[in-house]
Amino acid sequence: MKSKVYFTRTISPEKLVELYELLGKKLAGNTAIKVHSGEVGNRNFLRPEFWQPVISHVGGTVVECNTAYDGGRNTSERHWKTLELHGWSHYFKVDLLDDEGPDMVLDIPGGKVIRQDYVGRNLANYDSLLVLSHFKGHPMGGYGGALKQLSIGMASAFGKAYIHGAGKVEDIWTADHDRFLESMADAASAVAGYFSGRAVYINVMKNLSVDCDCVSAAKDPCMADIGMLISDDPVAVDQACIDLVYASDDPGKPLMLKRIESRNGVHTIEAAASLGVGSREYELITVE
Image (cartoon, rainbow, N blue to C red):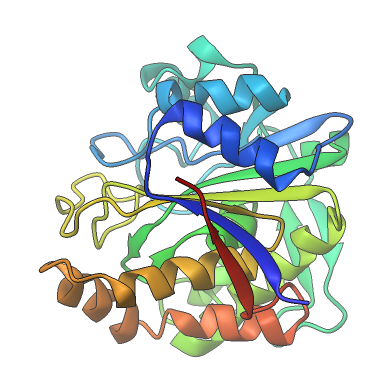
């Protein structure tokens, strides 16, 4: 069977709640809600006010992890200040998963490149997962969506360096590019497997910059907003977003495609699908 992906061109906080209900998958127990807290100076990330209705509807704890590069989120002290600055801790209960070590290690016996994924130890406190992704371009991955949130996003600071370096932290910025993309797929498979059957993925195609929310001086959006998607399959929801970019007649599409294609962004999707994380075949169900 093809994975179901619900899609609407209406972008609103209230519509997100409707999409979640349409998917019909209730997240039980203690739910971790993964967001991108936004690098200090970034103007494109989706603010807590946008996510607040669906987060309140689902219930749970907003979670984040420290970064592996200099900036406003590379230490717990700095990250907590950023979470406060951007309003996350004002609206929600927030858990910085790798605030304290040691990391939780998830084995990846069938990994293409890496065989372990290092995530914040607090992940062990959660029973289900809601991944809230701002779909956009990315300087290294080509694009950022659900698979990036599962991999780089859920990894601890050490884990992020480990993935970027394709298993060698010292090669964080110099590893073979496709092996880095495959490492992301490996890490995504570890987290998706950990929450197997207990995860939902939302991608919002808004503020479509070629740059990630981790870039403090990100370029302005190059395309008009497209819509919002939800699925219980992270591969399908990312593939659907890529397909929607290709199908767009927006004059800024060539800029976005140049970013995605020049970084071989689809390879992460290919690798994740081959690992059994999800399916690239999907049924797109449009919601008015």
